[in-house]
Length: 564
Image (cartoon, rainbow, N blue to C red):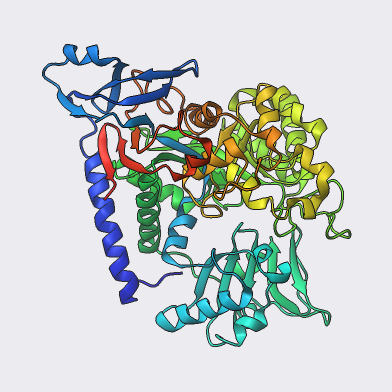
């Protein structure tokens, strides 16, 4: 975890805090202002309350909310208003990222990022350099490594870290957050040795002699996490400032935080009450938090300004595909003795569902493998038959690999497929190796879900993927990476249209959080959260979607970001 006495990091934090204070002051200190503002001469797009796409050239805002949208004639009705010429720029609703990890994004921005490393040796060298430049850090923390992109695609080891840094513990989370890489110092502090038994839902990888290699999968990561120092209030504040400043620069005005701790919940609640949250947050409380019961007992909550809403519980069925932790109905093709990991027992799942639904909370179920998804659907079906909850809009987070027979069950059970388009383009280099071509027929199946009438909602899963929503929109429409490869798209029959992609990042994402009456579009009465961008998403060639840049971001009718 970061240490505030480190001068270099202190300087960075002070800059971020200054930017955040400017954002907060601009967006929230005067949310009840009554001055009418009219944006005119814009190339406007929004979804109305029927989810239909509408065009407009004029947007009228009063007291932080939309008063009207229409053509240029609207301006004549507001002669005393502040008139802003949009100079023909494209204006769309603020993006809602339906699945991210806010504090993790902030910590990632403030720690070492290994996303672009090309080998274990290069990653270790970067860590050693980082450790040398930050002598005050008691633990060296980082995230983003991905062995699938390295020569040989093998997991790294503690040994390569020990050769460069042996005096301080190192803990580096894999890009998907479902595996960790430790040096021997960290293993020793956690008490992990040849006699340590892998916990249920986790795996300690070992060498031929039975010694831990330094790689811990899923629930085994908790052994290290238990000895990590808890973040201080100052560190959490710094992480939130870094994350929200970054999100606003990308046009994200609202985000669903998939796994909020009780400590974070208190922090966000206090900031919202003080009107000091810079981005709207929809909190999914972590099902493993010791204080879950008391949070559920307090019931769903939302502040008067819709800055922080709590109405969801996040629970895991399985792990991730890249680390072979995703639970599969049949063994992995590239590891025939292994079918993934179940992170939560059936008894625990039913207990969580029971408590959440009785408290009127939505259940957001992390499920990546076909078995993980099937188990999640089974538990939703069981809950409906025993305690109800059909109105709570339960969600399957990722819904990444689904057995073909289970896809229709999403519609039958009204379970929302909450998916992340860039996962497909990130995984396409290894997914078939993991599970084979046949199981890919139900993988990343956005078109199949939409065609059966399911509401698809989209996010990025930052910091696992980059938070930029236009990368996700591009991936959803083209099924290609930013180099427009493969030529015709990966599994192109599952591509969706630009209108469908935008709906999934706006009005439908808001619906998935029970917020469609206040967010997700620019209909009268909703918050005036919108962005100005540099190109028209609905007319440009699809291969250029990812290049879109945000010029301005507005929250509750106040400008909170402007491109330098």
